[in-house]
Image (cartoon, rainbow, N blue to C red; front, side):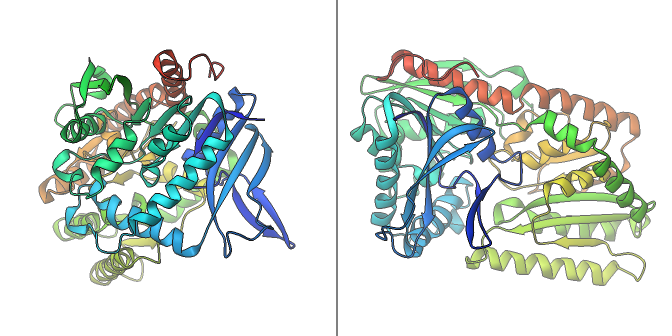
Length: 504
């Protein structure tokens, strides 16, 4: 039976493990990743499908399970798995996506590496995704494609299935033309995105940048421009926009351009934060800390995340304020993004070196200034640290959104704790009650961490109440509702007309 909704994403929608010699598909451990959110859409269709890749030693092996039927709390759906060799995965994902696209998307031109890119393999993999989506989609179906490593899928899919509605969502920043156009494949990429009915981003700045890039490469006109909602205008932050294109026209077609920040499941996190298990763990953490304040930082080991800049700020803090020695502790969670890539291995080495230096300079038998954790903390434990932290310190140099900042606020139903947030995180435009900092400025970083540590209880609570109100407004349900609206709006003028999804 053809599918009314086809989600195209590189990851499989479950964790595949082997138990007692049998393959078992488990739910994802974190409830707030994008995967559970996307799966929730299957509850609104009679038949859905998910397209992903799975590494295979021999893609032609007839025993490889290309199609799996899944029935879980989100509904019944098909998972079509594309068998890719280790070489294809390395070329398509680790090299082209991570070494060429990732630094450009985050405006790090100096990190861009063009030489090892095998563009024919990237095309080949994207064509395979498009073919699989075309085979699964019903007449007039919605095909929802996610993230930059599948940039060429919309163009190929439009050739194969001109009847379907194509929506594409970016989970990363999108840079201005002077950065994006460094990519030698820019016209092919943007030409593919212009085959969509909807192109989505987290915030207005990214959608504005996309339209500027498209206009620099093709004869694209702005068909509609709207004022940005007041709640998405955080004056003085780096990513603020006051108006944004919401529709463009190209070759007689209208393409909707959306900006909607992805949120978290506030109810779930709040409930988790108030369980006996979480509260008991929180009490234990605070007892272990005594009168020491806890600063919590959680990110991946990546040059975009500003981990090194943050650690150097912490070192300056201890140099500058002797009163805080023995009275503050940084829990720095820096999870390796990809151990197979030299650039991330180098950053991890620098992080470990700086942490060792700080602990050696300032630590004692009774007090360790920094606890460095390089493995992922299970979500159920992380919530307890969210509750126990005096400050959550999130200072990326560039970030599409930043879910950790939102998880921290959702966990603080006690209306306490301070969020220090980089103005270069997409979340900063909506989270104006956070203490906003500029991670490129020593003065800004120093001033804001002082402010957070010294903040009076009344100010902390006032800011947290405001943050929680914002978080409710832009929670994961609001994001899902807006994506549903866009699907239907695309159907009003696109090739596949009519209602496909029931109301979310």
